[in-house]
Each structure stands twice: as C-alpha cells, then as structure tokens.
Image (cartoon, rainbow over all chains, first blue to last red; front, side, top):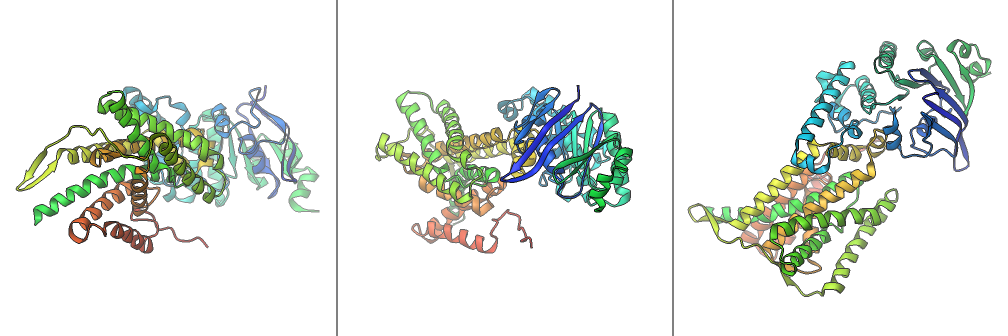
Length: 252
Length: 294
C-alpha cells in the first residue's frame, strides 16, 4: 500500500479551476519530485494535501485513511509536514523554540502541570529539548539554538524550516521550493541534505522545484504539472525526453 | 516630604499592579487574535459578583471563592470567544470590535436586569493594619498583598508563556496561525486557552480591586476596563511585559497626579500621557517600531 495516494483530486476557486484530476502515489521512503512552470498548481497541490484548502473533489489517502478536508493540524498529527515557498518561521521565537513548538503534539502534560511545573512537565520538556538539539545538529545549527529565528541568514532560515517540519515526526515531508533564492553551491548542499534526511529519518519526501535539472539527480520519480493538469509522470530519464514536458518548459 | 512621596508611590504601585493584571488580558487576546476584547472589563465585574455570592451567599471562605471565580471567569472568556468572536475570526477587524462592544453591553445589562443597579458591599477579606517600613512610612497589608499577589501572577504567567508547550503554541499562533496549524498546533484550542488565562487573571484583578474599593455593581468593569486597556496600549498592545509596565506606570502617574496636582485632573493626565505616547511612539513604550513596507 502506498503511504500517500491522491485520486482524482481537484479544486475550484470561484469559477477558476486551479487543479484537476491530480493523481499521485508515494511509497514509504520514496523521494518524488513535483515540477512544473510557475503557476502550474504545484503549491495548490501541497495546500490540498496538507489541508489548507479542502479539495472540491477526489480523495487523499494517507496509509489508507481519507484525509481530504481534514483540518491542517490533524493532517500534520497523522504524519504529513511541510515547508513553505516563502519562509514562514516564527520569527520572534528562538531557533530551538521554533523546533520545540513543532513538537507540540508529542507532549501530553496539561495546563496545570505546566503552571505548577510537576515532574511530568520537566520530564517531557527535557526530552523535547534533547530531541530539538539533535535535530538542529543534523543541520549544523545546534550552536544557533538561542538566536532569534528572524535574525538567521536566509539559507539557515530555509534549513530551520525543514528542521521544524521534521520535529512534527512526519512520515511524509513536503518541501515547497526549498532551494528558492539559493546560489548553485548552496543548492547542491541542500540537495545532499535532503538525501541525508530521507535516509536518516526513513521518511518519504515530495519535493517541489521548478528547476528541472536540480531534481533530476535526486528524485526517483517525478510528476510534471502544467495549467493545473498532470502532463507527465515517471522516472527522471523518461521525463527529460518527454516532448510535452519540453514544450511546457521551453514553449513551442 | 519624602515620606509622603513614598506612600504615594506605594498607592500607585497598588492600583497599578491591578491595572497590569487586567491589562494582561487585553494584551494577550490582542496578541493572538488581533482583537480588542472590550468585554474584558466586564469579566472583572462578573468575577466580583461570583466572589460576592460565594462568600456572602454560600459562606465559602474568600480564597476558595477567588479560585472558583478564576475558573468561572475562564469559562466565561472561553464561551465569549466561542459564541461571539470565533464566527468572526476571518471578518474585518471592525466587525469583531463592534461585537466585543456588544458582548460588553450584553453582560452589563444582563447583570443590571438580574441584580439591580444598586451597589452591594464586597466581602473584603479582613486584612487590616500596616507594616512600618521606615520613619513615618508604612504600607498597609492590603497594599502589600495586592502587590505581591499581582507580582506572583505575572511571574507565573511569564513562565507559562516562556516555558510551557501551550505558551510556545500561543506565541507561535500569534506570529503565524496558518503555519502553526500546519505544524500540528490546534489553533482553536490555543486561542481558547489564551482567553481562559486572560480571564482568570481578570478574576484575580477583580478580587484585588474590589478589596480596595469594596463595591460591586454591574457597571464597575467599565472604568477599570478602560484604564487597563489604556495601560495595555501605553506599554505596547500585544506585548506581555508592556502590559505590566503600562499598568504600573499608569497607577503611579495617577496616584502622583492626585497627590501633587489635582484629584479631578488625574484622569485627564492619564489620558493625556496616552495621547503623547501614541503621538511619539504609536506602537507603545515597549512596542517595536515597524517601518512601513513600500
């Protein structure tokens, strides 16, 4: 059974058809690329998968359970986490607090034990603190733990977003143009990190990118969107030579 | 001369710490849902009535009565949010603001109809006497209790917001509720907790206030609520330490004006300071000055 399966997923905004007949199946620990020109509907697909919008039609199955139309925090608790195209960190919080905030659903102590600082509070907060530091050290950011997230350099902010998403302990991680605004060497480094995350955490990743060359190297499969429709899907080498894909990217 | 000054300062601290406790409710709610909850002042009134009925009606001791009032006000805050504000969360700010005024009028008039406008004596706790500090300066035990209780409440709140998962969730939701939701935080619950905590603090403020001015009537929250709101704006609305600073500053200014300028002018001076601060620093004393984006 695939980890995530979307069937016939589509959404209308008013009369505008933003996405139609979107089909995808992601196996556990698979790295899939979602590519397409600007405005093709890639982020819309992410928004439907994570519950920001409810799809007008179709089903989204996460481990066989339909999650279409559920609230974003429930979908996140069930195992899908994401990053954002335009960085949306909690800028006023420190780096480690950003990560710990994402652990919210994994702590069970109540308001009273929080105020009274009962043993359960200390136990759980200490465990989360350790976990958050370990996660930050994956990104070489443990020494930046107490810096305000808004003061980080751009590239680090992007990495922190990934760390924060990982802290929710997802089974599937959606990365929305993680390389946007990075130079070629930073981008290469990021792609290596993404591979590392997949191996280390054993999760599946769905990666949006509009630079095709970039994802060719690391994705096992790719889905190409244009004008809200899937125009091709398959292995990178199949995509590379697909005439419809070339047309969508280069024009006729 | 100096002794007089110190005792006016203590008076200011006493009333100021009550303002601060209540201002916290305004500022926390504003921080998370960008709403000025004008009904917050009336939560004070409801709290005072709860304590009054529990102590004089049911003969319950003062402290348990205050704890019950905290729970009652927390519930009232949550209900207020669920019934009146939640349906308007995506509406314009003005609609929510007008609704808040509506909730305030509703509470005042519901209590007016049910309990008559006549002021009732508040069963203030029997704290009398005073502690001699130095020379002729002394501090009444009531003032001491007020200041200490407020300080303890504010310290607890600080640790709650800084150190617990709910506090972190509150700050995350106030920064970006959409992103917080996608990180697995139940935004509705977090907002409800914020209203509950703010209203419970208002209940404590109400117990302290009514112990100082022992009268309970349906409109008692009006003036107090407005002053606390001014305190929140003065310190920088949405900023928790700002509400504490604003409240204490307001109390001291008020007490000093009464002592050295004129009793009748004290409100004029308070609001005058608000106008000047807003002219010079629109985001409040502790607010960040944000440059306009072009």
